[in-house]
Structure formats: structure tokens, C-alpha cells
Image (tube, rainbow, N blue to C red; front, side, top):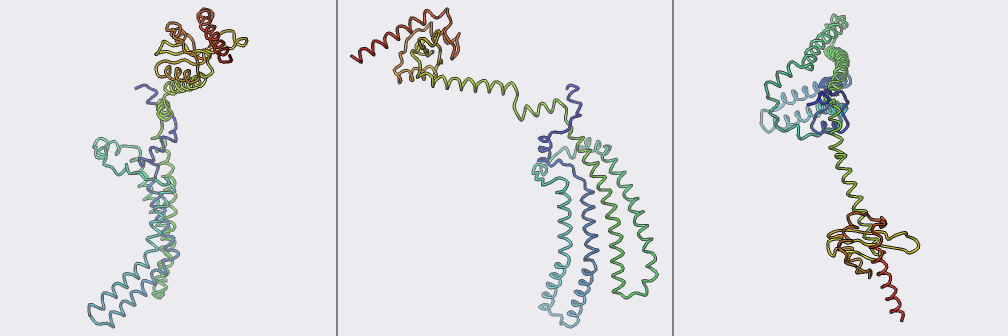
Length: 360
């Protein structure tokens, strides 16, 4: 492998990134997802936490009153349990929906919509011990370890100062009513959660930047890989040039067949080669080839000549020379002019004779 293949210093092309996305290889930070989910839970606790807990208390009170005033028959308990479960689901469902939507939104904001069935297939390389050992000693693992230590330290510091700021309230808790005590507890928990969530979002932002840079570095390409990709997508330039050449030849043959009806004479081999000639006296210095072909194309030229009453003259040696040495729309050179001129003069003479006979 050349040195050029090892130097992956070029940014990944959009085509490679799209193919990697189809395989499920995208730049995604798990810390972004966890921090967004935690922030959503903290916001829900601030806005709806107190109401949800008091609704739960009311549900418990109603359930206890119903049990105390009822008999122990089975027909009474099942409707009661069903109603309790339904009320509980209505109570907690908004919270779970918010958590799920937050996780989905955090994924979409990072990678967009990704559907990769290939990532669900069995990959035996994932259980390769050598690859696993290399992964343990990778830069990403060291970064994750350092990040976990720093994250734990920062969270401990934030929690300590947040609780220290709330310590003055602890002396007056004994004088509060149960309702006020619950509200204070929810307010303090929400305040602490918002501060921790803010720190997690900051850490997740740094991790997201590192993840994108690492993924971009992993997707880098060498100049040779970029050239190979262009060849794969657009085709080999030599193959494309050959295709264009064949297309031009096919177009030229098609035009030549259309011009056969304007020819004055067709020279044949007699079956394998056909050359159609045209000459306008006073306008052309020498006859011109308007069409030529071999095999099926020669047969098509003879068919067109027969359809338009164009004389077909068998001259194997001359037809082969004209077919090999001259191209379409090329005039007859001086070294061949005498031989071609005899045939053209004879054709014109026969044409004039036929016209006189038809007029007579």
C-alpha cells in the first residue's frame, strides 16, 4: 500500500458520510441524551411536581376511605384496583411521555433521522478480544474515564454548595405543616435538579464537540480513496471516454443511414461492405462518402438504396479500400478519383438515359 493511502488528511466526502449513516455510524454523544432527559425531568418537577404529588395523596386517601367502608368481597376489589391503576397511569403518563420525547429529540438533533437495519445484524468482530483490548486502550476510553471522574467531582461540588445554600431552611422544618413541608421539599429538590441538569448540559456540550471531532477524524480519507470514490460513483474516466466515443460513432452511423437516401451510388463487397457516394457537379471537387458500413449496417444501406432506387454497384476491391481508408463526409482523394469517377460517370449516364426513355 502506498504512502498516499495511509495519509488520511482529507475531510470525508458527503457520499462517504451518507453511506456511514446508512450503516448507523454517526457522531452521537450519550451524554447529550442523558442531560436532556434529566433537564426535562427537572423542568417537569418544577412545573408539575407539587400538583402530581398532591394528586397522588388524594388518590391514596380516596383508596383508603373506600377500603375502610367496604366489605372484603372480590367483586368490590377488582373495580377499585382498576380505577386506582387507571388514575395512576393518567398521573404518571405525561411524565413518561415527556421523557421519551426528550430522548428522541436529543437523538434527532444530533444525527437526524437514522434507520439502519444493517446495525442490527450479527457482527462477530464485536466479540473479538484483540479488538476489545485495543478499544480499552483507545483515546475514547481514556477520555470517557477522565470525563466520568471530572463529572463526578463537579456534580459533588454543585450538590454540596446547593445543599449548603438550603441548610438555613432545615431549622424551620419542624414548624411547618405537612403540606408546607412537602412543598418545601419539592421546591428544594427542583432547585437542586436544575443546577445539576445545567452542569450536565455543559458537560454534554463539551462531549458533543469531542465526539464530532473524533468522528470527523475517523471518517477522514486519503486522496487515493477520494479518487476511487469518484471513479466508483461517476465511472472510470477511460471507460466514460470510450462510452462517449461509442455514442458518437453510433450517432454518426445513424446520421449516415439517414443520408443514404441522398446518395448517387452504393459500392458493395458485395455483401459484407457497403459505401454510399454522393456527387454534385459544380459544387463538389470530388465525390463524397455519405455512409459506410459492414455486416448489418451494410445490409441496411443496401435496403435503403433499393427503396430509393439508388444504383448498387459491386466493386469489392474499391469498396474495401474506401471503407478502410476513408471516413464518412470525407471526399475521395486524388489517387482513388479516377476509379471512382468511372463508376460515377457511368451511373450519371445511365440516369440520364433512363430519364430520356421515361420522357419518350
